[in-house]
Length: 93
Image (cartoon, rainbow, N blue to C red; front, side, top):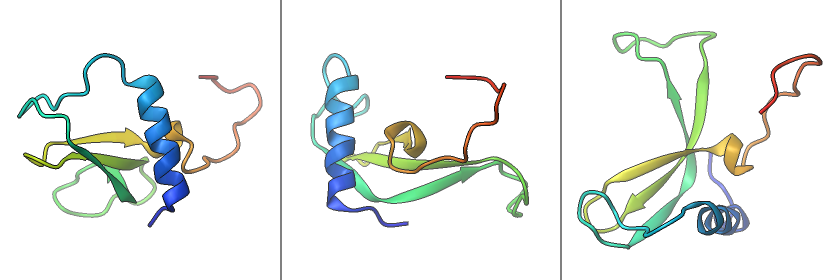
């Protein structure tokens, strides 16, 4: 799923607020990042088969432009995707 420039700007704002300390890549030690314009899914690996009904984690990649190291952030926590409504009496964050 592609996201808008407004979403990318919101992610950048979230990262600048929440990413404490130096923002250096742990691999190459550079500070040269790019935010993906696509939401990807992470799901349980089952030998290459698709797990139907299993949990899916929507993620946004933040990629080092120098070495390619990628950090994945949960798109729900970033506020880019809205999750299903919480059930009454359920766990809270």
